[in-house]
Length: 588
Image 1 (cartoon, rainbow, N blue to C red):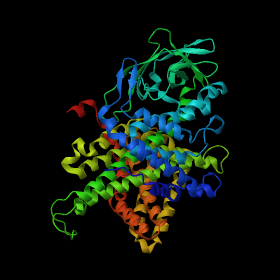
Image 2: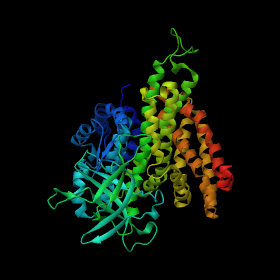
Image 3: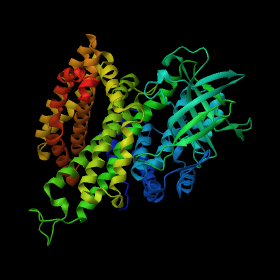
Image 4: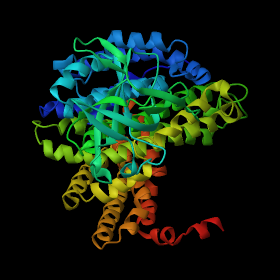
């Protein structure tokens, strides 16, 4: 099939569902709808012309390591040059350094489009945008002046170096060290799972590396952040000698084969890699989280984007593939499988989950923009973004796996072979639930830190808005949404009750009890929010679009929102069996 960027649908979700129009009216975002449409239309064309044709190529060819060099698949360099020439990397960069200063809400739709077309390619600019954000917020003026113009232009790319062989999610155990030397530091250590740690797309790669100073305490408070370039930069901005940092391995992975996942050695030659402190000593995680928090929303968007592509592929296949008879098929011969009830169920589930996940990610991005300093009601929206971030990351990336798996099922046996492309979506999506903090960690963050914000007031305000959507649905008799509204009300009440119980467990010191229910609770929140956003989309639509979106909202409520009370019951009451499990019991 040929990829088509459904720009109007995405812009509708951004404007009418995620709240960009409301933010514009409130004076929080200065981006006209016509401007957004023009930019995203061009982004869609770029993805269709340059990236989608390379998706299967990259999956087959992989990126290959040759000594210290890594070569990307055929066509990758040309596509990246076109990316730089078109200026796509500069959307959200500060204007002082060559950026366009546009909102993250627009960037998240760009992320959606790019990852629909080619997630392995899109990961590189995603990381660079995150690195730029961290440097804009925490680097010295001298570092900004040297590195940001090139990174914002895309001439140089950025990476994030956290994980070590012994330190995955537990960053407090990392061992990389930074030794002071004049106006810089010498970095020694090894980092693993570094996406685009080495490649042939740009002349320089700028690594953001977590390491410890010699007198740093143990644990996360002893970690500092350093900028380590692949090539040192001379005073006039030209490139100097190669730094003592080298790719010593590239992983063979389940998916996103064209994205090189590197093992990086700092100080392998014994000199130590020259690095520059970013932010304050011992405050490296704080600086890195500027990059990570927004990256979490983007990774969730990656999941929803692959889900969109899997859905497009499954719908196209189901319209052409003919098998057996179907009562609703009036044509001659065997019916297209899209007419069979169970296939309809799968396709509706795919479409509903994809649009629900997209809306949550978009809404989180709008909240991030509205929560920036100086914006109206910034504190309120900053808290809203904090609440939605773990849901956007975990729920949407889970949906990427679920929907792409259903896509394989719709294709039947043809989905299990590589010929149709359905299998690639399934393989590519699997990593997103692990990137940027596993989804279990996101659920823990939601329960332990986010539903407790302002003693639960932040969650209460959000659920209040979802209730208003349900109330509006009850009055839309022409769309037959009363049933969906009823299911939403029940779900919202179940989430409220579970949140109160989980906060009570935390207050009583029963932390493990609360955390044992974190994952089903996050799922419940995602389904509730997603169901409400699908209803909101129907209410904001007209004519045939309203009827189609209302049908999808009704299906989602009847099939998925109704599971929320069971999930919240599990979140509150299922902890005893989880906590009672021991390695011996599990191995029995």
